[in-house]
Image 1 (cartoon, rainbow, N blue to C red):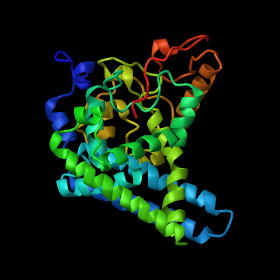
Image 2: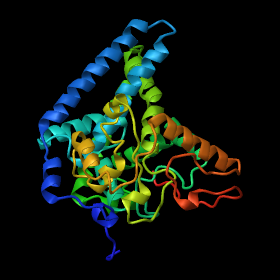
Image 3: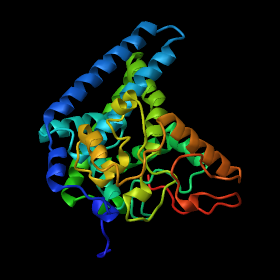
Length: 342
């Protein structure tokens, strides 16, 4: 599409002084290293809860807490390093991308290039390679997304295709040709690591079950509730990020776990801005963008209410979150606009 304008600040009519943007977008190793240290401390603290509750009924809530701290930042950090903005040092950025993608369970270069495509064609039907659910979303789609099974199935299918060198049309469209050997190598290593974990568990070594497998499963719904809010119920096929993307308010804990990605409109407008500077960016352009939607839990509760009522043929008007006009109906049959691409 030669006349296509990439979705960003320019396509959205948002402006920011170039000198200020350069200052906000400056990269440094320090914020990423500080975050890495805090994440490690949170993992040690919640991991200790798992250790001391082994053999008791408190093990499951301990694994849920640990799994949330493991899984949400793994997603957020792999996202930030896929952009190359977490650290100034390239080697550090790539090392953390590899490790966090291993936890998130997506080959890191596939993550990078499909996400670049997502920023270029944000929420454009047939063009955005990271649309994780059918639009409009119904209850069954919400359930498949939030449980994590739909995304895990997609990631494992991609991993196997890459491991065997069977590259899809989407992969070929979004990925530089020279990257495929690296992607195949990474996928094979990832699958070997996952297989080794399974062998350890089968041999009676249960620590990977308590500290990796079950926490990863238990933390996935929280991670996916964070990501679900990004574009659900908003406008597809719009050049403006203000129409297609949502920011929301959250607590200090949510900002920590999600690495400030609750400022998601701001991130899509200026994806070169590092995670630690997103609150500053949000303040700088607050008069040009929509008000953030209400807190994490309220936003997700309203989304759940909408998708449930849609599946029952009832009104889909949400009390307060932003919705594209055509997402609001008073009932009747719902026509699918887009099919999930991941």
